[in-house]
Amino acid sequence: MQFLVTDDNIMVIELNLRASRTCPFVSKTIGTDLVKVATKVMVGAELDLKELPTLETPHNPVDYVGIKAPMFSWPRLRDADPLLRCEMSSTGEVACFAPDVHTAFLKSLISAGFKLPPKGGNIMIGIQQSFQPAFLPTAKKLHDLGYKLCATEATAEYLNKHNIPADIVGWPASDNTCENVGIATKLIQEKAIDLVINLPNNNTKYVQDNYMIRRMSIDSQTPLVTNFQIAKLLTESLAKEDQMRPDSLFHYQKRATV
Image (cartoon, rainbow, N blue to C red; front, side, top):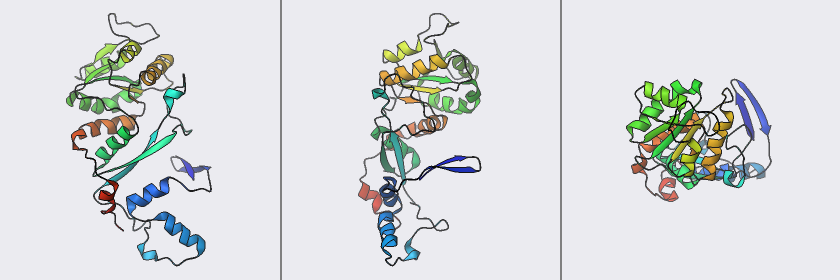
């Protein structure tokens, strides 16, 4: 079942009678075999309700986190804009476990083919004006972690105004008021950028430019983030990159509550 939630309104998008890939992931995470439970219910077998999780007594893992992350096929979709909307765009998924949400998140990104920016790498930022104040702590964190920031004109001006060094890059299609600056898409194409964070909306005259930056990121196999929450979590997680370790699934199953 897929839901769409807006404020206090809950709507059902679709309901499919099938086995979900989420079931084995959740079962492994909480230590309760949900498929086995569902089968017993369907055949009328006896259940020990005391052993099952409820809203009041959930089986939450105590010392680890499970994360399921989507995989996308944007490189195969020529000229498609790699922006996420309400329609499902992913064509696969991966599941990872770790002691905390940050290392689990990094593991899931790596497993999905996302290349983490190297220490001291170059990160290109383009943020619509309304997002800039909320993004400021994230930009500062990236700078504090040692990454070199560059940004489109207005974003770079905003970051520098708040004592976060950022070089200016030019828009690929529109006229640029700053001279002698690198063009965003050319820098990406030349592999001079290790990560692109592009947080646009349609309330800007640079809609086409932002699309060209996102598309060039995909075509040049440069990691791209287009969601504010993901950009924030990624930044927090990069500080713990050296804490990742390759534990087996059984390592975490032994810690399951059941």
